[in-house]
Image (spheres, rainbow, N blue to C red):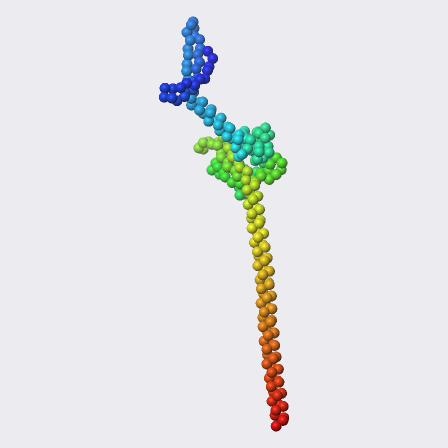
Length: 231
């Protein structure tokens, strides 16, 4: 009797998945069996949902074995880095992508799980078209207790555009500060020149006033001399 999977409705309204089959015995006797496979069907359904989610996410999802060889590479990784799964499976992502953490951490240490089994940071990579890509990387070493690593699981998000925007904003801020400093220096120089001119005018006015006073005094003395000469 061939195996068959069927779904039935329980008395309580829930659905149960069963695997039914049978075998012919000696004579006319047969042996039949029914197995509850509901848990397995739910697990398969959850795995299918996860697989569809991994395939559709824009993040890169990668899996490697204990030797660092890629065993999984989703569509998100292909879109970010340009390499297809066929081109990457069986290769080392660290070597192909020329990955370099921006915080100075050794990629070899990360791959070896020397960061308590998990690492989170920004990493510079090189895509298939030789363009620079900055990713926000979460790297998790797969192991249980003190047993050897069974491989690694990594999720990467492309933050290249964000990093460029931050760099452009920083450059704009620096340029604005430079212009403000130049303008401040120019205004200071102009103010200094203006103060010098004002002081010079004041000295000229004082000298002119003194000359006028001296002239009036001389005229006065001349008039007194004339009066005295006429007496």
